[in-house]
Image (cartoon, rainbow, N blue to C red; front, top):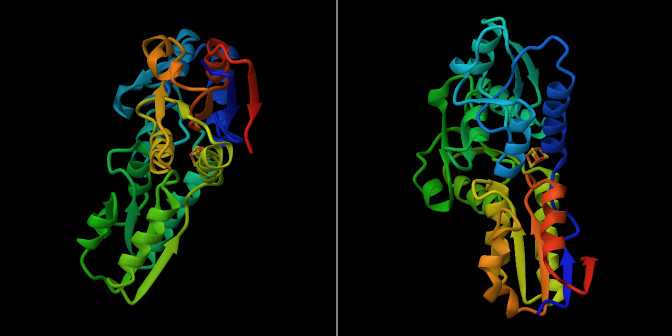
Amino acid sequence: MIEKVIMAEHAGFCFGVRRAVNAISDSLSNNHDNREVWTIGLPIHNPQEVARLEALGLKVAKDADEVPSGAKVLIRAHGESLSVMENLKSRNIEVIDMTCPFVKKAQDMAANLSLENYYVILLGDKNHPEIKGILGHVADNKNAEVVADESEAEKVANHPKIALISQTTQREERLAKVAGILTRKSSELHVCNTICKATHERQQAAKELVRSNNVDGVILIGGKESANTGKLRDIIDSEGVSVLWIEEPEELEANSQWLNDKNMVGIAAGASTPEWLIDKVINNIAAKKVVKGV
Ligand code: SF4
């Protein structure tokens, strides 16, 4: 029986996601010119929030070509490649660019450093839209590659100049290790720490939650496709604390055995998890006391 629930100090929507989701909601609610409102790909890695936006009228395209001329497109926080932006603008599509400023910074670094003849290494998931967008800003795509981890970094060939740019949701420890490996591959290594503050705060808060509060387990709330939520799971796992990763409160019932074993649980949530969903989960846990962690 759970006696106490402790919330991580930082959990839920980050600045960039909140900004993009608010812009989408505003466009749908104040759509005076009656143009269709689209995003390319899911606006956020959270199925419940996507369902809410779709109910308001949002249309989700699988790629830029699916967006009809005359429509309105909101670029999600992950950003897009230069070629996608040019495609949209050439077809009389109104583009509202909600690329997170932290992602934009990584895109600009990729563009500028590749122009300065750096071979660009992106540390991240090559299938993630943020990484595809950053790659799409490199001046010459042939002068860049994506590495997922230390073992892939070991396989990078030597280059006179290397720029290392990180996916904004990477773990700091991994960026430091990959930077260490790449120092052996180049006489000039430029490391861009593009891990964003929101990611850092949520990762630190997850560590603090388990280290300072002696919790029996952590309920992690977030979309299963969310990269930053996955990193939080890895962090809590590596602290040796049991994690229950759920997307919505309905999953609690199926995990009643896990819950019954616990006295004090922590709550953590990814940067793409809306507050209304966190509140719903907490309301579904019959705990005597709910407090914010340190
Ligand atoms: S996690 Fe960071 S980089 Fe990504 S959208 Fe949020 S604030 Fe921006």
